[in-house]
Length: 194
Image (cartoon, rainbow, N blue to C red; front, side, top):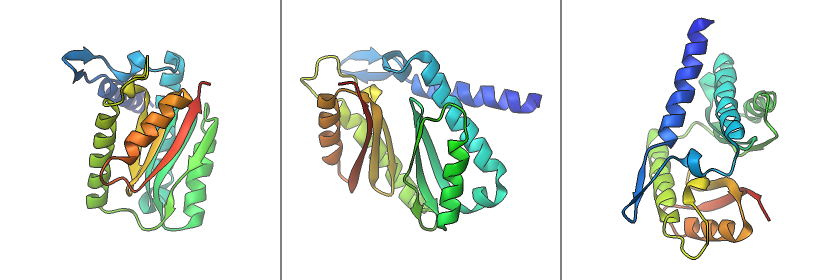
């Protein structure tokens, strides 16, 4: 039991530090995403916990874990499942497990019924995610907008956008994401503040 507690603390700490990497834009250093996040600190931590608990529950389902490729992203209790499952039953099982995790308000199951994607496809998706995140720093004219408030997930060329934004911010983010090379489709999963 102690091993699992240490593992959980290490993973949460690693995720928190990952989000705190400084980004230099226009000569000024911006701190980690958590500093500018519109979620409460409690919600931020809850989302990290939801992702970790979901991953652990799916990992413990040996049949499910061995056959699917899944990404679990939580933002303010709204969970995005992306990836591939070879059958509708396995896709639904992943969703059922995730819905059973405490603090999950809603699940968007965007998993495809397909064989797990190749390493090359996943690498391309990682590159697209980076390009979309970088492009958001080019959005001008929106007072108070901070691109670190947008969570970007790419799966097989489809870009999923999450965050708590005003409608004008969401429109600008969506348009900017659509302009990035390699993006085939943009799916908006925003919570609107107005």
